[in-house]
Image (cartoon, rainbow, N blue to C red):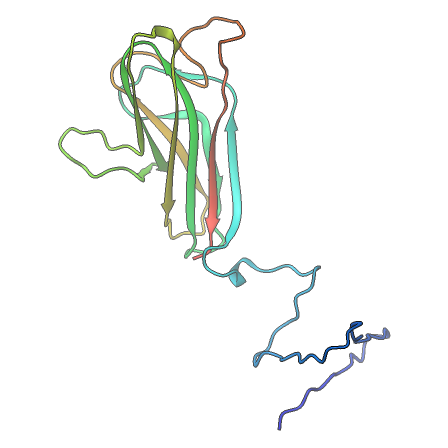
Length: 206
């Protein structure tokens, strides 16, 4: 037969009372067969104790100003990045972005996620095709009023506990101006938008 032992602390002077609830039903509290500490509402749970799939931390950046470029190769979108330091090398990092862009005329534009200087979440190589996370073709004849929203997501496995910076990069079809958070028109009136774009990174317990 095993036993339950309640042991006092020689250094303390307080009295701890175990009180029964107001109930007429018999209950049995079965203790786990392992050592440990009882968690309470004042307890902190270490990241290493969370089950796989739990969100450990979230970092998000919102870009509210505008950005423009004519680059036909991938460049960083200024202000659309987020840095995170994983608590464990087994953690995964979920990266999400949402942006609005504008241009004039019919153009193809590409976006990709970059972990520091390494592109991630992109399609397989195939000849001269552009490897990107997301892309969008702005067609039609709406001129300076062409605008679209673009999203992207990737679950990364960086295998590190060092700080990582995730960035959103953009490439244009050719040397035309692509705008972030606005359309090509510079009109200042009630129908001309100024948008916000975001990147969010979440550490997921592995």
